[in-house]
Amino acid sequence: MSVQSRIVVFCGKGGVGKTTLSLALALKYASAGRKVVVVTSHPLPELAVSVSLEGLSAAYPAAAANLFVVHFDPRDLLAELVRKNFPVEWVANAVLDSHIYKSLIEVAPGLKEFYFLARLQQLAERKASAHAAAPDFDLLLWDAPSMGHFLSTLHSARSFETFLSGPLAVAGADLAHFFSNTARITVFPVTTLEEMAVTETVEMCRALKTDYNLASAAVIMNMVSPLGKATSEQIEEMRASSESTRQPVLRFALDRAELERKRTAELFNGVSTRPVAVERVKGWRSDLDLLEEVGKSLEPLSEIV
Image (cartoon, rainbow, N blue to C red; front, side):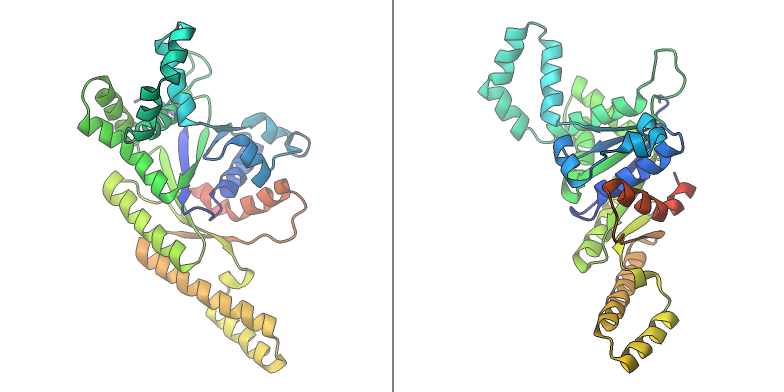
C-alpha cells in the first residue's frame, strides 16, 4: 500500500457542526506547521458563507501557508474522466450532453460516490514529486456529508468490488483495501446532545464497526453548554442556590446541564468510546476567532491524531 496522508473523518447527522470542527482542527494543526487539506461536502462559495476564512493570511500566516480547502463534485469528477478517455473535445461534449450519460450518472447505484472516494484516495496518496517519499499533505480532514450519504459512500467501494467485474471491480477492490488501512484512518463521529442526534450517532458507530471495521477513536459532543461539564455535586450546589435566590435563568441552565449529562451517559453506554466535549463558544468577533476557540476544546484529539 502506498504511503498516504493520515485521514481524519468528521461524520454525523447534518447540522451538528462537522464543518466548523474540521476547519478548527485544520487551523490548529496548520498553525503548528503541519500541511493540512480539508475536503468539504460543501461547495466553496457555500462554505464561505457559513464559515469564513477571510483574513487568514494576516492573522495566521503560518496556517495560511499550510491550510488548503477543496470540494469535489462527483459530477465534475466523472466529466473529467470522460474528457480523459475522449480527448477529442467535440466527442467528449457529445457524450457529456447525451441523455444516456446524464441518466447513467444519476441512476447508477454508487457511481458518483465511488469516484468521490477514488479522488479522496488520490489526494491522500499524492506526493509533491515522483521521487518524494512522503505524501504531499500530513493530514487530510474529510468533512463528511450527512450520515446516510456518508455510509452509502463507504458502501459504494464494496458494491463495485462485489457486484461488478473487470476494471471497475479491480478499482473497487483497491479502494476497499485503501479504506481498510485503519492505522491511517481516524473516525470522529460528531453529535449534539439531543435525543435524536445521540440515537443516530450510536447507530452509525455500530454500522461503521460492523460493516466497515472502522472503530470510532472518540465521539465529539459539540456545542455543550457551559454547565455540561459540571459534576453532580456542583450542579446540586448551584441548584440549591437557584432555589433560594429564585433565579429562573440559572434553573433553566441547570436543567439543561442535567439533560446533557443524561445524553452523555446514553452515548457512552451505546458506543463505549471516549467522549470529547466541545463547549459552545459565545461572543466571538470573527469566524477565525470561533475556529481558534473551538480548536482549544479539540486539544484532547492531539493524543489520537
